Length: 373
Image (cartoon, rainbow, N blue to C red; front, side, top):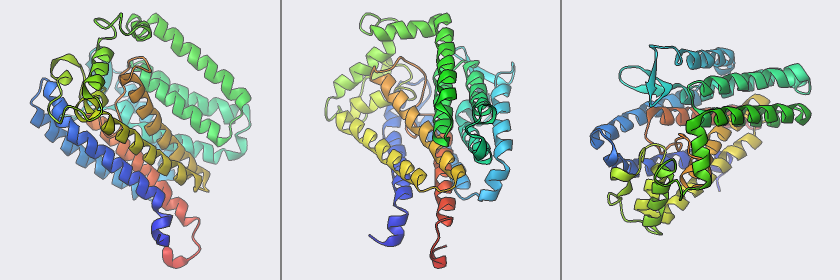
């Protein structure tokens, strides 16, 4: 293998994995949109336009200078928190099905918690990089980063969106652990956070019903576990090879939100187990590339940026697949690169752009031959 290709192989894996996953999503999306209330071709066209915007956003971050990213890190962190506050204000945030998570920009409606993930990761990474000597201390090494993570999770819970809030918490804790935070401080704080979220879920009748329905799916197939039950039927109908693109029935009238949260079930019905396993393999390829890039980042800032973005993409994919296969309680988390929605695409591509940017700048610190600059 050529030396230049070998050196860039991890980032090639990442780009290839993201591109193929997006392609898989577009192939099955038009069929999944047949069950929506809007004209499928219009929604598909909107998704294609949003994909172009997401690509531009990801490319802009990938090509950004290290100096600019570090200078804007705290601004991005504060701006991300502010946007999560703004979307909660009456008359500004858009409320859909009891949840206030979106900002209506006229031509597109954006889910704020998806867009600000990159700002959260870069801001956290910048703080940790500047506080490297204090990572073993209680205040600077634990209270502040846990406080930032808790703030973002709390704002997302207020929308309410418990699944994404847990996702923010998981990513923040992963970054702190990989940074070198003390477990003697981290574990008690994480335990408190889990207890608080558990108590909030128990006090919320709708979400508590999802937990109880998940524990006995068949008994609640006509009520709280209806969506999950229909999703499992889709996998069963697809078998190994699937019923063929456009021949699936679950998204027509049986499976709600087939083109967003449960598109993995549509893939399973129409393209079969071969396609679903291929999706899993592509996510593994993507994860492998991100892990390799993180391992080669000798700058703690870029290492933590890669860890944070990789954790968001990986955990979100695992949560979505766990939900649609009945391994986790039902919650509204989209499948990165595949589910319908501009916010999902823009957020995923921005995180991939940050990973590519980390690769670019981490490579500069390892230069031996100036001609390879």
